[in-house]
Amino acid sequence: MSDDSIPQSDVIDGAPHPRLTEKLIGQSAAEDTFLTAFNSGRLHHAWLINGPRGVGKSTLAWRIARFLLAQPDDDGGMFVDAAPTPTNLSVPVDHPVARRIAALGEPRLFLARRPYDEKSKKLKQAITVEEVRKLKSFFNFSAADGGWRVAIVDAADELNTAAANALLKILEEPPEKVILLLVCHQPARLLPTIRSRCRELRCVQLNETELDGVLAQAGFEASQNSLALATLADGSAGQAIQMLGADGLKLYASIVSIAARAPGLDRGAALTLANACVGKAAEQKYDMTLRLFATFLARLARHGALQPSTVIEAAQGEASLFAKLAPNAAAARKWANLLQEITSRSTHARAVNLDPSSVILDMFLKLDETARN
Image 1: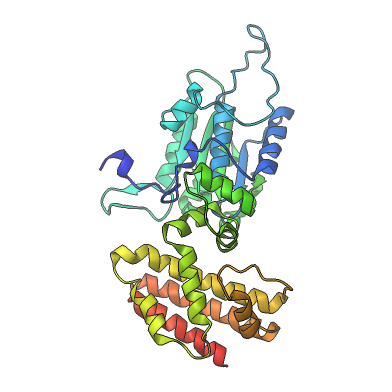
Image 2: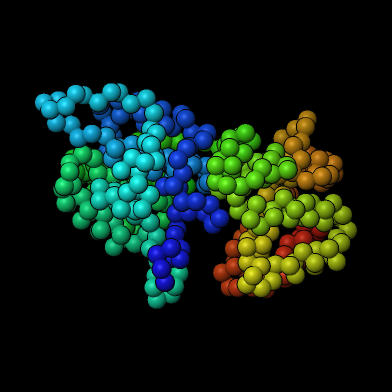
């Protein structure tokens, strides 16, 4: 299997790898925080880059890595003039460091991520202790040309227990001129001792305009309903890209259309959607259906709890459906309980490889039953 064909755990299918993304959109506050620390001369050795999935955390990590590795080595000012104070993290794409990083050929950079298992021909489920041991060996060697050394761990919440403990030892006694960048989707899954040794960089959800900009930069055409896409993707470019690849807006509209009949399920329409999720070629659609069904229930429960005066519709007729099915807080609790049940059942179904059509049809039946009660 060629390197290009090996799956990568730190990239979203259909999107360019974050190291190849030149511009970061929507995370100026996080960039400014890091730049201020750098310019102060008191740069923390470990940074926890956290926030929702798909909002640019990995892109930020790679921008920081390029920025640090492109800095001139400090020789005390004896032979060259002091470098001007940087005002942003941008490094030209034709800079030697940027070119080496794009090719994963920069010797002062280490990337720890879930490795590919040649035996199973799949990515491993966790970052293993062997990967962190490689990181320790990397730090034990002095860079030939001096300057910073940078390690990116993507994602830190995918470290197994042994790997997390090994990383903690590095964080406790970091080498000089080393920066560790820990990309993290769920900080609560990290050891508290790891979190306490890192400075936080928080990445936030993207608004509609920012999301459009990210998608355009990634080579996607503008969506005809960008507001609905931003709403369902919850401000995540990663989720938006996955939705575009699976025709998610149309799929969500189908879910809303079927739910609009509740109580009184249109079994034919539900069965048609369920059968479309069967087979290996339909795995992406199955995953997206499960995700969007959960999104629908979450939006339904949130409407009942908050009773907003206006509803941003992600599908036609959604506002009137919410008003019918979730008119008060009591209804909100019913839908929240169903969401919890459906999430648990779908996770179990994936684990034991149950028939997708049965799983989807059962979800609609549960929705109809809840609407009746």
